[in-house]
Amino acid sequence: MVKKIIYRTLIFVPLLLLTVFWTMPKRMTGDIVYVPVADSMGGNDRWADSVMKTMTADERIGQLLMLELSGKVKPGDAALKNMEADIDSCHIGGVIFFYGGPAREAALINRLQARSKIPLMIAQDGEWGLSMRLDSVPVFPRNLALGAIVDDGIIYELGREIGRECRRLGVNIDFMPCVDIYDNQANTVIANRSFGANPVNVARKGCAMMQGMRDEGVLTTAKHFPGHGNTDVDSHEALPVINNTRARLDTFELFPFKHLIKNGAQGVMVGHLFVPALETNKTKVPSSISKNVVSGLLKGELGYEGLVFTDALAMKGVSTADNPGEVAVRAFEAGVDVLLMPPDGKKAYSALVAARDAGRISQKEIDKRCRKILKAKATMGLDDYKPIVVKNIYEDLNTMYAERLNSRIFENAVTLVSNNNNVLPLRAMDNVKIAVVSIGKDAESTEFEDIIGRFAKVDEYKISKAASEAAFNTLAAKLIGYDVVVVGFHGGNAYPPNFGTTLAMCKFVDGIAARQKVVLDVFTSPLALGKFAKYGELSAIVISYDDSQTAREVSAKMVMGGLPFVGRLPVGVGIFAEGAGIGTMKITLE
Image (cartoon, rainbow, N blue to C red; front, top):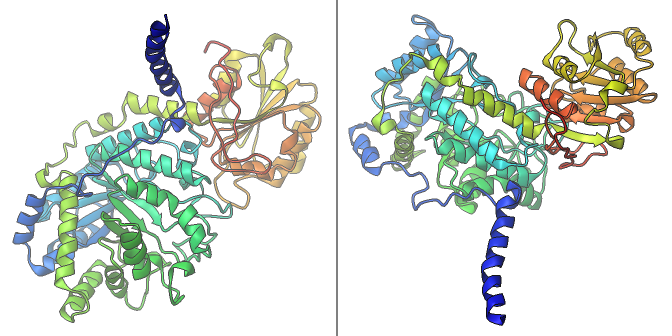
């Protein structure tokens, strides 16, 4: 009998543990782990070495440069002629495209690739996918919405989909993920580009996105090293100063970068930031051209071996108008591999050649970095380059899968922050008089009101967010007598100090919340909530993160119980801490 009990226990306990492990939420089951091979860049040594043998010393310098081109240029335009001339005379290694549509960009990529002796690294600055720069492609939410998702597997799926779309277009490197931690709510440049305020969540989301992209053969860059989150200065306009201590940097800002490096990061972008704690002599030098930051910290202390990119060298946080080539040389001296968007490509190339000829930089080090870039190109599949097929590119990019994935993202992101007396989901509709007020939608009904109207009889009201206080007071008087007022705040933005709110609209919401049940649905950054003085008196608060059609549809279904709430706040706001969120059950049929 004892033997039987022991035998059954040996079988039952492992099965029980397996069941518990299998059903845990994804955040509890550990990371999607990538085990780097001996060579973290992978690639094809034989191809890189064979190409190196065909290149002159000056051609190897050109591989260090990546220049920009608008996707809207046409044959004969000066910008396109200049780019072709730079390919011919400067032997540039890559092109980053901005704006336009996929068919035109694909045709331009084919044209430039055919001209270049060595296949070009083609980049896009698409932190939330191609739609950040292009029209007529799937539009996914920004990172702050992704930070609200518990299941990191969804972020991995999104990374794979964005990677698939990049490959179809001919893009082989996407400058993302942004793993800056959003810990300064006065930040005007990172904002909803960040996954949030929790370094662990930021690291996990960035890693899942990176791995999804890599599995589609697209290189990514963790940015903006060593961390652009704690600043209220935009490095496009000036040089931000990060005054955090070295101990704080090690445990906070650097945490996501360390995590991605440990998991096989192939690219890191260094930002234009001055971090006194990292400069031994406290000289005010941008991180992107700092030997202490690039060679000392990133490559030395952190042991990073992948490609190092500067942020755009034309940005005011680093550029020097009097000598545009000098910044490229200083970035190389700091240890950077790829010099992104120098203000003048020809001058940058000439300055690098002159620095080599003067003995300031060595040909040996140029060759080392050129080979590293070529190996990365092989990893991207450029050792077997084929032109892009332009036919059906719109259909291939805009798939039903991408559309459904977008819905799943919002179904897992939209967050119920407060729910006094379980007012949501709304139910017992036959006995409840409901008004739906849309602030910021002045004309036609949106999906939000339409879907709520399918579940219950509602009266709709619309008002501009820029309306006068008198107009808001008139509307408030009309709402007397309703059991529940659902207020949708549309047309906001992610940027301080007001996040798209106005004083009159905030006073309106505060006023009606003081006398009746009000559900506030914020279709923008959760930080907009802090502009409502009496948000603690609201019956329920929903953060939908985005004012897209999909976000409005999903949020309305959740308000009415057609879908459950599962999201968690990626940033803290007022009395609501980062990670806050109330789960609900689906109670009605869609």
